[in-house]
Amino acid sequence: MIQVHNNILKILDKINSKVEYIFNIDVDMNIVLYCGLCNSVGSVHSYNGKRTIFYGIDKIAELNWHTIDKLEPLLSHELCHVLHFELRGEDDLPQDIEKNNYNEGIWYLYEEGFAQFFSI
Image (cartoon, rainbow, N blue to C red; front, top):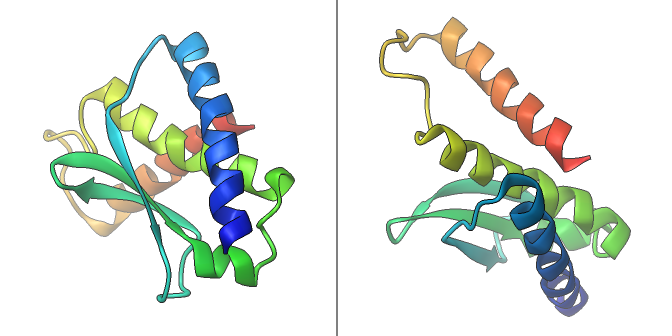
């Protein structure tokens, strides 16, 4: 897990420069490394009033994703979620769209598609 932590720090510096260059945006966010749940490698939520990326370092270690080659796409993907929310100015379905299973499912595919496309 120490290797995961060290590699995350190396990668974030590189990714942040790329984000500023491509999107011309500086995002104020938190990054939380947590251990103990073993259920997710990454997710984005709000924490202490900021958008926050949570990385499950125990799950990352379990999947052997501790190398820079494996971590870089993961970190880019989760950061793309944050960027998408920042660029849109909202984290959820637009207010004029009815919240139901269908619309939320389509929205989830849209969010993941954006993050996957720009993280490659």
